[in-house]
Image (cartoon, rainbow, N blue to C red; front, side, top):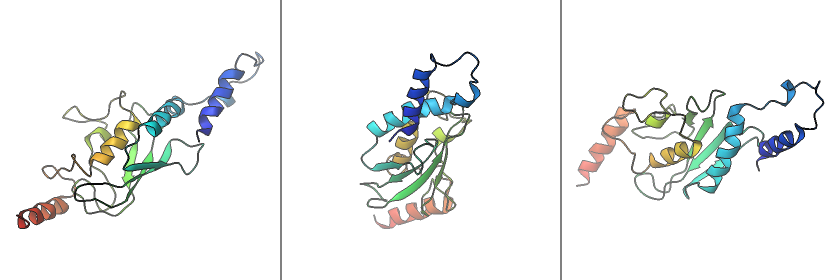
Amino acid sequence: MLTLASKLKKEDGGKTGRASGASDSTHRVSIRDRLLTKEVAELEANLPSTCKASFPDEDKLHHFQLAVSPDEGYYQSGRFQFEIDVPEAYNMVPPKVRCLTRIWHPNITENGEICLSLLREHSIDGTGWAPTRTLKDVVWGLNSLFTDLLNFDDPLNIDAAEHHLRDKEQQR
């Protein structure tokens, strides 16, 4: 699956045999892509059972989709698609994540914008993005939006939060 990883191995193995006059510019691989080869392998080994990652182009590990199918809570049995784009400045800046599935959720707008503190580049509460975070943290965070991180107190979609709270009180 990791085509880029095999390319990196070939390049690393071929460095010693290169002629001294050969240009390195055609053989450079970005720091982001080097990090992603390791992180994607770790992610695939530690993916929550409710998530499935798919890579439309195996040579572009910086763009992929994530399907989350919660097995408990309000969204049980649903299937929600997310698009994840990892910018060139990764891991100094967080990945860009958008929900492709239209959903009525307190932390996701109808346009797919997501309120998840670890996706914030600058966070007041100190739980925002840090270079020590990985794609695994992002995936587990997105998965948790449907269970323990469902936030009604500081919602991005206020109408959805009020609707959920109103329905919850009616069920009592």
